[in-house]
Length: 109
Ligand code: FES
Image (cartoon, rainbow, N blue to C red; front, side, top):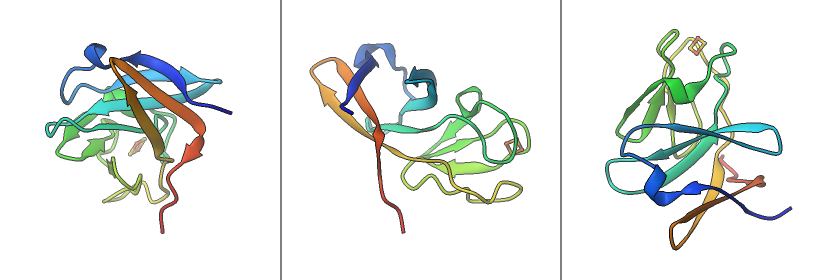
């Protein structure tokens, strides 16, 4: 597989998650307050909740349902009740295009 354009960089507003789908995989794209773009699995691992409906704080995205905050860098939840990580996708920026390859997840230890 290869990276696909999911949105324009100019579509992203700081700390406002955008839900996109690539090959049926829901992904939350976030432009953080330092200008870095992140992409993590959009479905909370605690329940069937879209993380892009949650809240960005620093480099975390918090699920609105029960408050687990997921690291935008590692995908790991930083607090219960979620305890399984979400995938983190490699983001490429090409001009104003934001590209994601759903097969390219960052390996986290
Ligand atoms: S559904 Fe996300 S923390 Fe419960």
